[in-house]
Length: 188
Image (cartoon, one colour):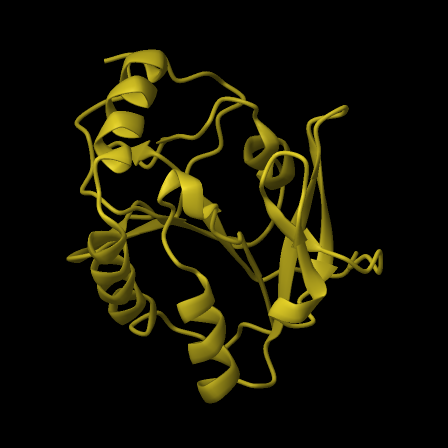
């Protein structure tokens, strides 16, 4: 299937989930997340969930990190739709977030983070058996991850699709992908 076909199929599949199902799957994703190796991780970049799109609740990951690895710096994105680029900002708490015009939670403060990032949690609609992903189609994360020396971890509410037929040379492969029931490792 092509990215457009997968995007349409998986958007409908995700939209059909109830709030309770999203929470249940997010809690299962958190269990997979806790199995990752955080030994050499000083900074994690993670996306904040768009509730209306039934995205995984990454606030669960933030709470777990703060309780278990309080020294890890948490970075969250801000999207610039004019340039299709992300800027990166220290997470200061839920009270320091507001919804953008596109209904995306973003940091209020403009303090940017430009240091090293060790792990990136990547949003996606679907991923394939090779580690390629289908997002919303704007390329924000492919641009961000291009040439980035960090562990790239996809977060998926569903298991993988077989093959994305129209991958492109600019598509950045994931190193790992978490699903509710499994950790996929594409580095082997």
